[in-house]
Amino acid sequence: MRVIILGVVLSMANSSAPAKAEKEKPKAAYDFALSRGEKIKLAESAAPPEISGKATVYILERTGYLKVREGTNGFSCFVDRQTPLNSEPTCFDAEGSATTLPTRILAEELRAEGRTEEQISAIIEAGYKSGKFLAPRKPGIVYMMSPSVYIYIAEKNVVVHVPPHLMFYAPYATDKDIGEPAPAANMPHLIRAGQPDAYIIVVPGQGAGH
Image (cartoon, rainbow, N blue to C red; front, top):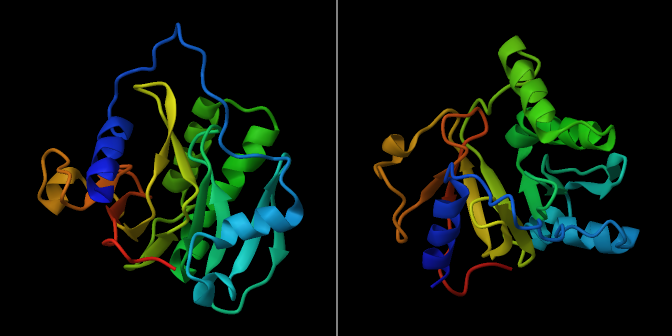
């Protein structure tokens, strides 16, 4: 059932259809009013404690990310937001921490400055083109095993809950590369297709997790 749900969510997330302008946008899923301890716990919930307990941890404040712990295993845990309405506890491995994480940190700094999402996307895209940012250079894993992942689906103008899942780096990959011209509920899925930070998503079976 979780695979089917995620398939439906990703199909909507990958759609290019615009949100209906007449509907007011839903409330943001991330709560800036959380205490420091709650923010740390939320970030750590992305990965098993054996990993998140030794990871570098960033918490999200209104001014951007704040590093609150230096890790020892190369992983970095934080709450990602692909849109300001999202709340996505995430743990990058060492490769993602070195390559993709800096773009996420910059995105929140720019949001705090009042930049639009279009401006932020353009700045990050320019950073990739100039070599300031790098796509992952080798295979690696991103843990998103938290039960508290929420993303905004523009097509439906709703924030939806996404089941715990794992992501694997697939820089610049397209749906064709993973053998599915259209997302199927029982197969891995691709998000951010064609971009430097494209990922293949896999949902572990029932009983998996931590």
